[in-house]
Length: 146
Image (cartoon, rainbow, N blue to C red):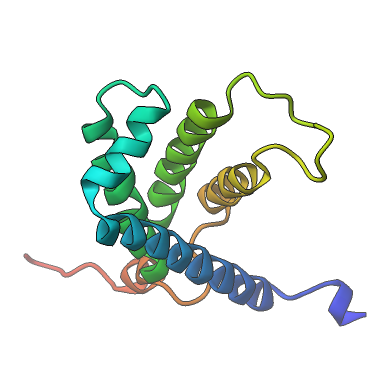
C-alpha cells in the first residue's frame, strides 16, 4: 500500500526528474533554433504574422535556453515555471488561435503546447523537487554580522 501513498521524499524525487527532463527538452529546442540561425527562425515567426518577428524570435530562443537551464539546475524554479507558462501560452495563442480543440485528426490540437503550459504551471505550485539550487540555497543559514 505504500506504493499508492508515496512519501514526500519520493514525490520530491519525481518532481526533480520531471523538472530536469522538461528543462533539458526546452534547452534542446532553443539550441536547435539557435544553431539553425536567428534569421531562419525569425522568418518562420514572421510567416505566422507576428509583429516584430526578430525580437520575438530572440525572446523565444532565450526563453527556451535560459528557462530550460534554470529548470535543469532548479534555480528560481517557480519564477522559471511561471515565465515558461507565459511563453508557451503565447506560442499557443499565436500558432493555434481560432483552431478547434478537436478535429478529425486523432489527438487534440496543440496538445504538446497544452502539456508544456500545464507542466510549467505545475512547477509554480510544486517548486523544484529534491535536488536543486533552490533547496540548497534555502538551507544555508544567513551569515551573522555582515
